Amino acid sequence: RYQSLPYSRVLEIHKENLSPVQTAYFQKPLLLHQGHMEWLFDSEGNRYLDFFSGIVTVSVGHCHPKVTAVAQKQMDRLWHTSSVFFHPSMHEYADKLSALLPEPLKVIFLVNSGSEANDLAMMMARAYSNHTDIISFRGAYHGCSPYTLGLTNVGIYKTQLPSGMGCQSTMCPDIFRGPWGGSYCRDSPVQTVRKCSCSPGPNGQGGRVECHPHITDCDLCMFAADCCQAKEQYIEQFKETLNTSVAKSIAGFFAEPIQGVNGVVQYPKEFLKEAFALVRERGGVCIADEVQTGFGRLGSHFWGFQSHDVLPDIVTMAKGIGNGFPMAAVVTTPEIAKSLAKCLHHFSTFGGNPLACAIGSAVLEVIKEENLQKNSQEVGTYMLLKFAKLRDEFDIIGDVRGKGLMMGIEMVQDKMSRQPLPKTEVNQIHEDCKDMGLLVGRGGNFSQTFRIAPPMCITKLEVDFAFEVFRAALIQHMERRAK
Ligand code: PMP
Image 1 (cartoon, rainbow, N blue to C red):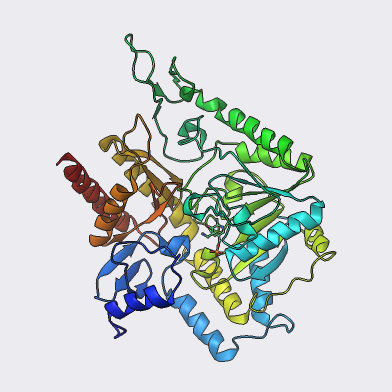
Image 2: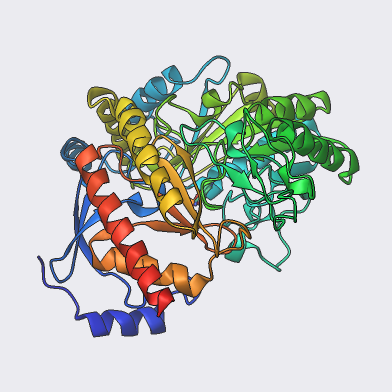
């Protein structure tokens, strides 16, 4: 423990001198002093299991000893040069990162944040295609800069301020909250049995369960469409956007392989593949935003786009790339990279600085040496299957979904209505988890979904601890509700 300002003074400074529009979790925000791998410690010495990694950012563990040692060594040698001079750590990093991407994704632009990476990707898409319109999903989060805010379409991050000219949003193929589908369609070890919202009729018709392969459609409402047709229904919606977008000429389409801020939303299988083809037919490029899903977090693959069996034209990455150190990258093809030159001389003072690049290299080495992608796969699947059981126990859990170490638990008023559980109730469960030593995140349009994405070094034993805490918080909540 180290001595710092008293908590009351921290609150005063926060109120008077810091941004009033920053979200802080909990009635009494946590004042964190120290971190070690998957653990965090607050100013009073309390220990927390970090199941959110500082918003899916700490990929290999807080203050990982190897990454810290490399950073310290680099700081002794050279912090900064700016890219007008060469330094070896940038070239070493570019060599390592490009080896992890398939052909022809080989040209790297180093920047400092996810928003900046997506800004640049938007410019590339427009420069290359000579078109203007860029499409993103409703529910997407691609950044908070004025340019990327036009693509961001989720909850409190939607803005009334003019932003992102030429940005169009399209229906998110959300198979839990959207009109079509069942989670059988998605790439997840967990499958949802989904009910339509009709009340059962006198002969038992309606309100029935829809689940592949024995689909028992509701005979009363549209909600129980065959889940295998969901992809087609959502593709029809996607085509409608493409055909009606202002210029009818698409510069690009942005997609997160799994939506993070929207509460770990997964699309129907094959959706992205077909969507990418439709965008390319119209002269646009396809951008995978791997800010949350990259670097092995999804377990089965190093990049989220690989799990959809697609090859993007541009990939953007941040967060886990530096294990919490500010750095980001855009990777594209030589052809697209060259097209930028006709309209932009791109420059970033800190992009690709020696310290960030040394840290980025160390992160890649640790992921490999410690088999963290495999750990994401094994421990993530264990976690998903374990937490999915809570769906049967609690009517307020609508869905448990995800892949690898990225999991969403969507809270509802009841399974039949699928109405989001009121924020005050979700807040209380969130606080209770924290009080028992577990930090989880929040997401979704109504902040109704718990987001879980621990550092990739997590163990099954820690998953068991998190499960017991989460279950205890739910029991406590149900008791409160019953009173
Ligand atoms: N893309 C995605 C998918 C994100 O989740 C985020 C951050 N939440 C961003 C882009 C923006 O990253 P940054 O906050 O580093 O600008």
